[in-house]
Image: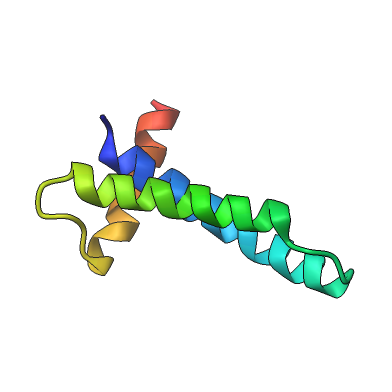
Length: 74
């Protein structure tokens, strides 16, 4: 299992959920899809923290993003 990829995917999914929540509340509708996205993103982040021994520190997150992007581009 690739904990770095899970962490990056979880952060991206969670970041996309924020505008979805705001849009749902602005349209006066329940944020169902946004809530599911938050749960999926949180689950991926939790899986990343559990699968990596020692976990991550906030200072490591930019490095993790760079590693994942570099691996995708190569």
